[in-house]
Image (cartoon, rainbow, N blue to C red; front, side, top):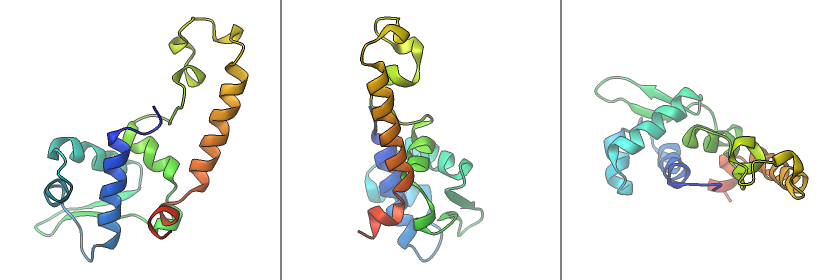
Length: 134
């Protein structure tokens, strides 16, 4: 599956964070979006590890964007949120997930790989600015 709830929650959180005047905490975001706090905390930590967010410490701490929305690709957000590259078909990226166990012999494998490449290119070209400022 290309996008799961992790990606959705990441994007919803980034939308709030980008418009905030000060760092936004996990608890505020979880309440505002009605998302389990522990799940959201993991997602935001992954976004911070991938330099999409910066975590500010202290009483007025929370998360802020590390750079302008036009410099953050949707692909990077998805990879950070999901913990892996997006895949329309898992069998294209991982030979061990091929349902037939014969990815090299699969008649549609070349097409699926090309299709996935086009989607990855599109996601890399699409920035958060394209989404939020459209």
